[in-house]
Amino acid sequence: DTAVSQTPKYLVTQMGNDKSIKCEQNLGHDTMYWYKQDSKKFLKIMFSYNNKELIINETVPNRFSPKSPDKAHLNLHINSLELGDSAVYFCASSPAGEVGEQFFGPGTRLTVL
Amino acid sequence: GQNIDQPTEMTATEGAIVQINCTYQTSGFNGLFWYQQHAGEAPTFLSYNVLDGLEEKGRFSSFLSRSKGYSYLLLKELQMKDSASYLCAVMDSNYQLIWGAGTKLIIKP
Image (tube, rainbow over all chains, first blue to last red; front, top):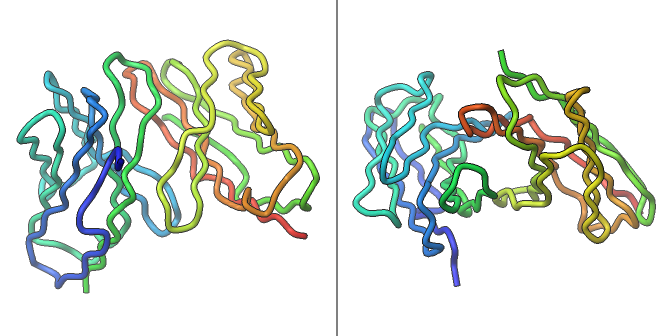
């Protein structure tokens, strides 16, 4: 009974390529997130999204774009990958309302060569 | 700016007690979270404090002082499986979680 799932778990690709990471949650949550965790282990919010609003961290390059086909999915598309994009990307979700525990997916380790 | 500070690394002995501190400066406050993250895995929720005081949950307790911008996570009867990173996160006035870098806890036999 996977609550928040991500695919792929590992992604190795060349600089300049375009790639997508998929995220699905079966918890019925209204809000989903994408985080980047770099080698220093800081979790940095990239996007938060519910059916009303997309909030973008202004430091995120516009090469990164979230796509939500429905409430249960929030995919991350990355254009023109760069070496500095190598990190672990976590998807998370939280219930309706503004304060709540976030449930994390298992993470996608992206390596850009 | 917004800032969450916690020690980078701590070492403790199996069976002992350890306290992991977190201080914060954020624009607004809507609660403080503690998460546990084992190496190579996703963070998992441990506790949430929004009022001052101590919240106890089994071997883990979390304390909050809003006036001091301070929290701690107390782990009792340490077990080897408690070796992990412990992340402090504060929800700001925009309901965004601001994360600390985490404290790596090493448990020795």
